[in-house]
Length: 508
Ligand code: ADP
Ligand code: G6P
Image 1: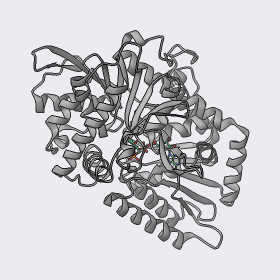
Image 2: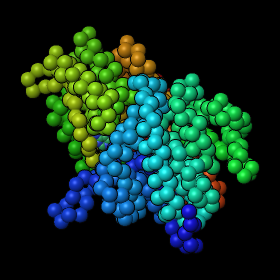
Image 3: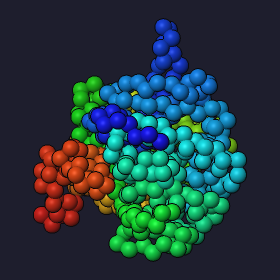
């Protein structure tokens, strides 16, 4: 692969399965119409890339015709976007198949059974090659290329083979499973070898990095040392690959500013009014995914109504369930289950003009999301397994009034950071019910105490800092060029929730 002449190409290139926007039909004049793509990866990376003069290589979310497979880069939302086309068959084999029918369940505690199909694997290899070639094409000499997530685990090694001049980082947004589970994958060696093409492999939690290093030891007989391994190339040269945790976050300041804006505050009041001004609004916001524990949450809520511990007249569960991966069988079945459950609870406890569960199967703009966070007394995050869960952090960032309570599954990456949330094991329905009651009756003073501590954490550890930490670990010479250093505009970095408690902020 030829290296672009000096001065050409981009110095920072992000490669992700998805572009930050999805193709959403066309305007009347025939020009393409775009809408924001779903999920936490886009939420996190969009503000980082908007502040960089870099390029984002990804898929547009729709099947391409042959001529669109080579569609030209374009600018949108302040970013340079480089589309990679996928045919209908590749969407089936690579995206719905190997990425979301094999890897997603395998990496999320096999909540549903992963399927292993050799044709899906062949599509995964072919599409990873296409992403690697697209990145190699646009990266300047000596550029940093940052590959994202489980859909593209082979790209680092493919890219290194084509462009040894690049610094290559990889970040896994989802958990990396224990070896006993990972070992099921018939192509486990190839996946590890693909990842080891990177100079730095980042994970959400230290446990994920340890699982990865352990897999390298068990599968490839490499010896992990000091959070990394030495790999030997075909020509005998040695290279060190580091693996460690970089917990992802959100654009905290932007989320807070949005939540403080007058239209969002007015909309929050309006939402409560439309819900019938109940005493308690409980909120869930998730992609409609079996990892999110939406069924467990509705079951606990229904039992609390049955038991009379929550009053059906004065409580609403507002559940936003974003459409996701709708052609994958397990997601279709989940939707049927959840909608049946919602119907049952509303049938048993609703009355004319009042549904106890308001179920919304739509995407919303950021303003509307911020207004929902403001309108909610209790936020429920009950994931059975979740790399991070940015919704939890968004709720915290939106609550500038220091009100509201967060119930948070201990199986999220966010639980490691948000020690002042009410932690739950969502499989324990009685424990979940008790946590919901605790959140509903929590005093304003206690809400404030917990919120302050969590807001401090999310304020200091935002997505700009995450990107800064990752990129400067990969390439220390980038310090000063990448915004988000810990000392920038965040005040005293040494302050954390424990420091707050030590100063006596616990006023109970
Ligand atoms: P995941 O990445 O698994 O979807 P996260 O909680 O980490 O889970 O990130 C989800 C992101 O998608 C958040 O930024 C959240 O605000 C956003 N989101 C979820 N549902 C919707 C929706 N219906 N409309 C708009 N944004 C949504
Ligand atoms: C999670 C994954 C992302 C993915 C997003 C939305 O956040 O980590 O890689 O983009 O979900 O899923 P989708 O399949 O719609 O891209």
